[in-house]
Image (tube, rainbow over the protein chains, first blue to last red):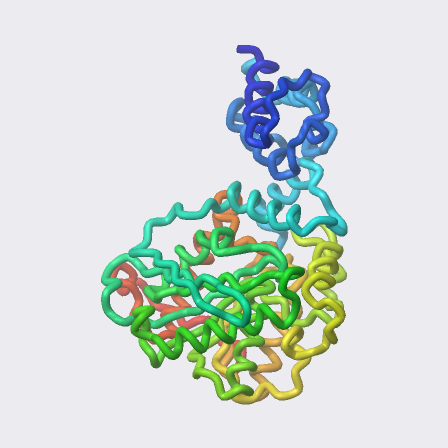
Length: 82
Length: 332
C-alpha cells in the first residue's frame, strides 16, 4: 500500500467515527470534512504509529496536517518506507 | 524546569491539530471536547479495581449519582472514604471523564472513592454544584456502612473546578454544622475566580486550558453571582480557621498554580496542616492524561500515598520495604 493509501485509510476511519462515509480527496481539508481537533491529534498519533516516526516539533504545524496530501509529503521527509 | 517533553508534545499536537480556542458557543461542544479528549488520553474503565457501584441520590429537584470505587484486595471491610468532585469548569466533565483518575487513586490509596456527578451549568447554575456536593457529603456521612466506609474517616477531593468545590465544601460543612471532614485533597484547584494571578496571565493561552474558555465557563456557572463569594473563590474567604488538613497539588505550567499555592499559605497561616506539592514540568489536567503524559501514573502513586497518609492507612505490602517519605510539609 502506498503512503497515500495508508494515510487515507486512517482518515476514513476517523471520519467514519464522526458519522461521515465520504472518502476524502487528497486535498480535502480534513477539519472541514468533519474531524475535530482531537480527532486530528488522534490522526497525528496514528500516522506516527503507522510509519514508526516521531514528527519533530518544527514540523508540528496545522499546514502539515490539513490534508492527506500534506501528510504524505510530511511523512516522505521522515520515513524510509517511501 | 522546562515543560515535560510529553506535555510539550501534546500541546504542540493540539496546536497543529487546530485546537479551537477562545469562547465556545455551545456547551454541548465543550462537554464533547472534554469527553473526546479523555477517550484519547485516559479512556474510562481501563484499570482493574475491586468494584464499582452506582447509587442514585435525590437532591433538591433532581437526582445525582454517587459512584463508589473499591480498591483491589479486601473491599468487604470498612475503609476510609474520599468524596471526589470532578473538574470540567462547572459545565463539563462527568463520572466517565474522571473514571481513570478515580480508579488509580482508589487502588493507590486503598480507600473507597465516591465520585459525585453533581449537576452542571448552565442548566444548574451556582450554587447548585455546591448544594449537590453538600447533599452528597451529608448523605454519605449519615450512611457510612451503606458505602462501606469508616465513619471516622471521610475526606473530600477534587480537581480543577471540582477542587474548588471540595475546598468550598469544607467551608460549608464547617459553617452549616455539617459532617466532619477528615482532610481535603485538592488537585490543581480553581480557588479564585475573581482575580487574575500572575500564572493566569502568563499561561493564559497555549497551556491546554485557555483564559477565554475559563471565562465562558464562569459566565455560564456564575450567572451574575458575586465572583468574590467565598463559595466560588475560597482563596478570598476571610476566615479559614477550623478547616480540615489540606493536601494541595499544583502543576508548574498550570494557570491555577498560583492560587493553589496561595491557598496553601493562607491555610497554613491560621495553623492548618498543609501538605503542598508542585508537579514540575506539568500542565493543567496532566493527571488525567496518562496515555499522553506517562508521569500521570507516577503522580497517581504520589497522590495515593498521600491519601493513605491522610487516612492513616499503612502503605501497601509491596511498598513497605521501600523508604516511606512524608509528603512535603509547607508549614504546620
